[in-house]
Image 1 (cartoon, rainbow, N blue to C red):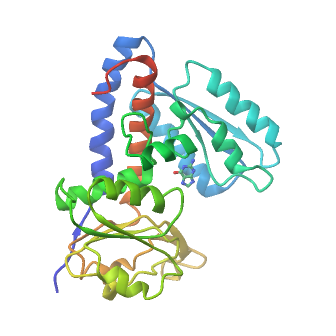
Image 2 (cartoon, rainbow, N blue to C red):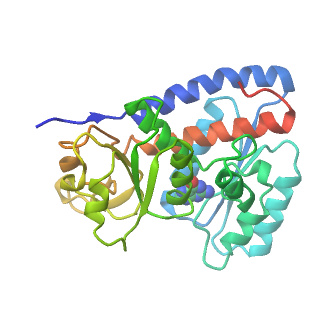
Image 3 (tube, rainbow, N blue to C red):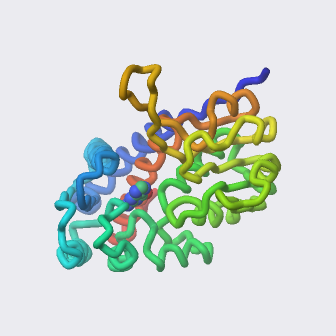
Length: 299
Ligand code: GUN
């Protein structure tokens, strides 16, 4: 039984951030100050707190300034609006990220729509969604997880994804839909499938490239995968792990890794696949935003 190449997202993300750290030094010598990322966290969701901490740590490691605003879960919507407006108006802030999900009493769409599009390093503002849809990569900021997923696919397949049958499982605004736009721009034949797709297994089995972003632990089994296909697993699901001891948990993807690795040509692990790439692309977007705002070359 053949065994897939395991795509080392942690190593590839590390190379990206190392390269970025060098470019940040040049940027600082040109502008006199470091790129600055502001992250807003509302509430105490432990997973969000871990992500936000990792974002801040990586930002500082590569020479960015990192600002974190942590607000209690019962913060009024108006307070979040005022904070985003202040960050928009602050010329020292280059990138703004509001960690999702927000508490139920805060209108996520409204908050995302308030972020200045040129500082929207998540690429979630409707202006950036439109730019991506129109293929305007010069001015768009691109969502980090799908952008990172494509870099990982290329690391396994080579730069040219043209003509591949790409099947994305999941249709979220954060991953599925932008991944479809990016893969179309790479000349893939793109199918967006989801949990309600009829004959999902058959659809996935046609894919040369699978992007799994459906949010269901280990849903996609090895016998759904076309032999030799590239499998990018975006899922991060916490499940019980009684084998590790009472009450213990572990992270798994949307793909059943143990069966899929015997069929796929290449596959990302969870953790250590797409996750680190999301943070690396966030740094890339922040740097791109800072360069555009200051008229400095990002190369
Ligand atoms: N929550 C889960 N993923 C993301 C992301 O990529 N950006 C933000 N802002 N929140 C998230």
